[in-house]
Each structure stands twice: as structure tokens, then as C-alpha cells.
Length: 578
Image (tube, rainbow, N blue to C red; front, side, top):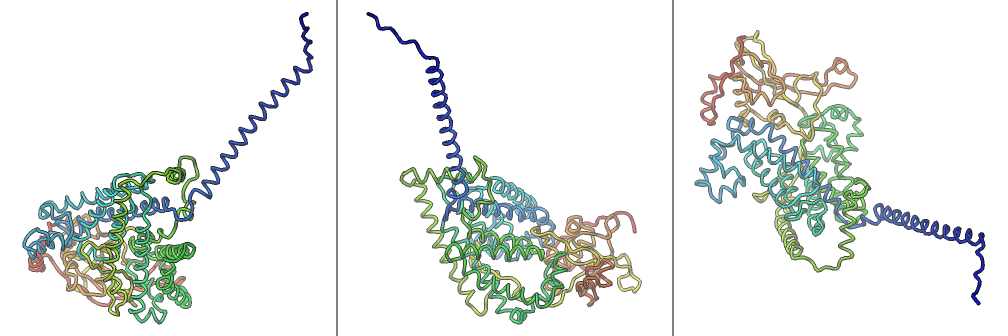
């Protein structure tokens, strides 16, 4: 007899559907919980675990972008000023200097490249000098822009930048005779070894940041600061008397508006500044080789010190550049806040690379071994080239801003070993009249940035740099006989030379016939007191005449000088008559 099936209870169906629904809901909740857990884990990874101690992927990106920025500024200055300064018709034509080198070495050979390392020897510099200067500047600007935007580079890019800047520094004569040029070349050389050989990725998977290169950068900032501190202690008495800062802001090469106010701080504050300077330059550098917490404190102090110097004066890109090696004191954990936390940003790429390295047990590639050999060779080279540098630091006759090898790979540095106590300026003037007449009307030329017109606000241009203005500061406490380019500058002004007048702010004879005579007068400059009668009248400076610096010259009177110096007489730009 067939077994009868029990009729289903409607309440059982409802109960089964409710149970199924609850199970489905629970599964979804579990999935959501897992998702939330994963998201939370990822967030923790990004904020805490991703960039642990000793990782320098992000540090390298910061350093390369910063170095690219400094290169960009340097090549921008070169583009705007080099033809006017060292071009074929410049104030100090590089071709004259290069021909002397060529003659002394018996032609273009290994000695010429050793003495003056530059690509200039590969062209006919007597005819193609201006073209060469422009090409070098433009290529430098393009490549440095790539480094800034990409945050990564390879050997080819960084070597090219280094060679290009070498090629203009070594032919730049007086205009490139400053310590920051060698410092940029040393910084740029080390940057080559921060990068892979070919890969331009900002996070090159198989090329972690070299510990040896990081130590080389710390060694660089150590030498920069110790050199600067030692040259001060051994140099001007005012550094030992704690009075140098009483003068520095007023007498530095190119003051800015902040310098005006800093100069007028109380004397006790100036003494505090001097003591702080000695502490930062002579004590803090030793922190750079200590464990992570102290090393980071040392690096932070150095960066803060450079920022203060940037704010208080126009010292070209020197202080901006000095921040670069200080960045090597900070690992990814300390600089991760500078980067985005968004998915697929740089920090995520770094996390992926680190996870792959951690969980993939693959034998090192051949390129890794080759890179290790290069890094060890670099360490040996730096150690060897550091021997004369250390000897110089320990010497009582310490030389400042000196290179001991033609490629400027390891150099000695220093700044403001002596501080001028009075500020003097050379003021160029032109006239149509008899220069010896008491009624002659002399009109002043105004330069881009150096003090001239007492009512003009001091400029704020750092990290940009006006090379002519800087050299005018040196010339003011020397003589025109020691700076023959000053006479050449006067000759160019006598012709209203367009290239030369582009280097100055105001030519009083623009749009007119050039002056018949040019002279240079010597003035003493001091800052006006805050809220003084002069300051309230809009004057930043007070000046008093010291005497004549360069006696009146005319185009006829300088023919023998121009011939002797192998300078070409400029073509006179005649405009409307006076």
C-alpha cells in the first residue's frame, strides 16, 4: 500500500525561506566584513607597514626630483646669461681662454680634456661657441624637466646632465668660479648611482636605493658643514668674537628685503645667531653618522638651517642645493607623508615591489651583481679621493671651495671665512658731455639686483642667480686692474651693446645714441634704520661717495686695451641724436 505523503505545513515553508534568507544575509555580512577587514589591513599597510625603517624608495624619488630642479635652475641661468658672459661677443669670451689652453697643450689632445673636461673640444669653438652654449642649455633644461616630472631617471640621463654642466662650468672662467658649481657636479655625480642603468621608472623593481650612495651623500653634507665651520673658526676674528652677524646681512653679496630687517636685530640676537651657526656647522654634522633617530634630527637641523639662509639672502642655488644630501638622512617611514595614500599612487607601487621582493625567492640577477661591483668601486673611489680633502680640513692652511681632481668628484667646501665690515658698490655712469667738466650730466646704470638706487626694494631671486651682479660685489672691494672685464663692460655700454644691456635692469641711454664717456664711481652703502626719516621717505639704503673707481673712458681711449686683450670692438647702436 502506497505510503501517503504528509501535506506540507505552510508555516514550514515560511520557516525554510526565512532560514535561507538569514543564511544569505550572513554570507553577505561575512563578505562585507572580509572586505572591510581587507580595506582596513590595506590602510594599515599604507600607513604603517609599507614604508618601514631602512627603506629608501621614496627618499630616492625626492632626491632625484630635487636634483632635477637644481639642474633646471642652473641651465636656465646658463641659457639667459652665458652667451652674454662667455659667448663669442661676451664680456669674457670662452674662445680666447680655450685658444690659450689649446696653445699651451700643443693642440687638442688628452691633456686638453684632462685640464678642461668639456664637450667644447669636439666643435669649432671659434665659430660655433654661441650655438654650443644654447644647445647645452636647452638639452639640460629638457632632461632636468624629465627627472622632475618622472621622479626617476637612468644612468644615461644623469650622466648626460653631469657632462653638460661640466662642459660649461669648466669654460665659464670667473663667472663660474664659485663653490656651488663644484658642489652641484659632485651632487650630480652621486645621483648617477642612485639610478638604474636603463630603467627610468620612479620605482625600479630590481634597483633598490644604494646604501653606499646614501652614505656618500651624508659624507658630502658632513664635509660641506665641517668645512664651512672650520674656515670660520680659523678665519675672521669676528667669528670668534661672535660679532660677524652684526655685518653679514648688510654686506653679503646680494641682500634681499628680509636681510634689511634681520640686520637690525638686537646685538644679543646676532651673538645667538653666530653661536647657533657654530653649533650647526661644527657639532650637528657628527649626528649624521649615528643611529636613525639622531641622524634624522641632524638632517632636520641642517635643512632648517638652509631654509633660514634661503630666507635671509640671495645666495644663488647654494643653500637649495645643500638640502639635497641632507635628504639622505630620512628613510621612507619619515618622508611617506609627502606622498599620496591613494590607490595606484607611488606608495602603492613601492608596497607591491617590497612584497614581491619579500615573497619571491629568486636568485639575484646578473645586473644586481654588476651593480654591487659598481657601488663598491664608487665607495673605494670616494674614499681615495677624500684623502686630500680630509688633509685639507685638518690643515691650519685650509683651502676653501677647492677641487683636487679635474672632474670635481670629491671637493672641499666653505663659505664666508671672512666677513666684510663695510659695503661698497661700483656704480657705472654715462654722459654725452665733457667728462672733466663740473657741469657734466652723468646718468646711472641700474643692475638687475645689486644695490644702486637707494629707493629700490632689494630683490628676491633665489635660487636664480645674476652672475654679473655677484661679480660686481667682488669687484667693489678690489680694483678694476684686477678685473679687466669691468673695462670691457664699460666698452660694451659705450656701444649700447644689446647683449650686454640685457644683463642690467636699466640703461639710461636705451633708445638714444650711446654715451660718449663711461666711468665708475665708488660708494659706501649702509641700510637705513627702520622708521628713520630716510626709511619713511622710501629709502632702503644711505650712500656716501668714496671716490672714483674707473676713470672716464671712451671708445677711442680703449683701443689699445681691446687689442691687448684680444677683444672685438662692439658695433655702435646709433639711435636718435641726443
